[in-house]
Each structure stands twice: as structure tokens, then as C-alpha cells.
Length: 93
Figure 1 (tube, rainbow, N blue to C red):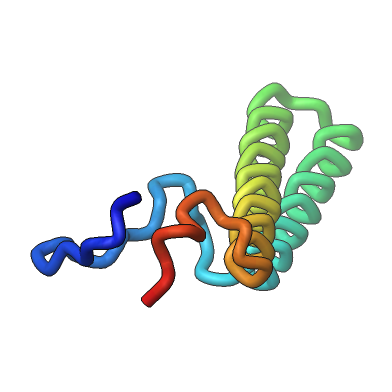
Figure 2: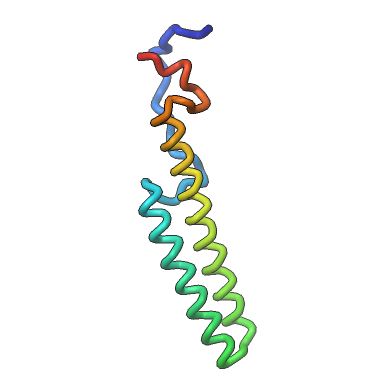
């Protein structure tokens, strides 16, 4: 359909949700932050103060965010390798 190459287009930027450059890096970071969240939860169990639970929840959200980013990056990587990405028909350079 649209085989013309547009010369004035700039390369795509990273999406706003992308927190790491590679899926492996994102999985590692997500795992580290989830371990930090578990540590804060363990501390909060021993000395239950509301701010400790807040820290545990915040680090858990950060860890899950990294893991979601890793899964999305991995899916995008596989889609482009298989040639089944969203714009695969336009990548016939």
C-alpha cells in the first residue's frame, strides 16, 4: 500500500513506558526492586509502622513496572524477529 519512503521522518523514540533498553536488563532490575520490596515487607512485619508498608508497596510497584516493561520489550523483540510486527509490511527496505 504505502511503499514510499518518507525522507523527513525521524527515527522512533523509546516509548514512555520503557524503563530499560533490553528485556534482560529490565527483568534483572524488576527482580532487584521486588527483592527490595520483600525486604521492606519483612521489616514491616517485625516493626509494623505505616511508612514501612508504604515503602514496600512503592518498591513493589516499581518492580512490577520493570517486569511489565520487560515482557513488552520481549514481545516486541520477538515480533520484529519473526517479521510479524505491527508494521512488518512496511519494513521492506
